Amino acid sequence: MTSLYVTVRHALHPVALRARRLRRPFALHVLGRTSPLSPHFGVERGSPLDRHYIDQFVAAHAGDIKGRALEFQSDRYLAEHGGAVDTYDIVDRFGSEGATIVTDLATDTLIPTASYDCAIVTQVLHYVYDVHAAVRTLHRVLKPGGVLLVTVPAISRIMVDVEPGGGQDYDDYWRFTPGSCTRLFQDVFGEGASEVHGYGNVLTSMAFLTGVSREELSLRQLEHRDPYFPMLLAVRAVKS
Image (cartoon, rainbow, N blue to C red; front, side):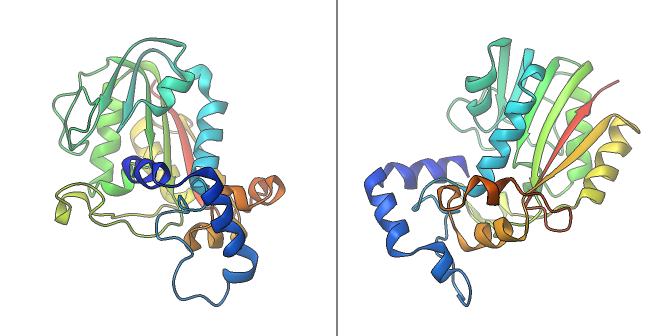
């Protein structure tokens, strides 16, 4: 998805983005529509709404990002918060540019065991059908005391064929709840070793589905958290 965001945003000048938002304002057009304002998470209008919460979560736990680190798809957050990182690897299933390990989380045998102090896994697990095996892999590759930072969607549009080749290679399988995240990580990391955070509310959930950008919502609207309508879930888990 990162490559999709970058491709669309590079094609649009900031002035064009502002003009697009003015022509098609969220407040006037979100209700009653049968098609989204944006089919690409709002990147034609600004920046994706979910990234507001992902950025916030990772920044809040920047102190965990140190030593030998692992990130998935790109070094987006290691580049921003990796000042205490000595070395790192980038994992990608399709071997995107910059990837140092090409593997599938569910069946991995390539990522070295007990080798990483931190792993950053943002918006990845819903593309893995055997999500339990993926979490077991993430637990395996962490050192004792290592920290896993994960984000997953609670509500989102469905993504299909987002990578070259598409087809059945990159299907979108899951949406999560606080309960499923609690059980999923507790079963692998143990009771009390993980904490689940919900971000968003009914307004941000509707806005995200409609393709509204985060620039179109106020900070007050973005920061209100409703446990009944989380848009995004984030998990911090520590290996004992």
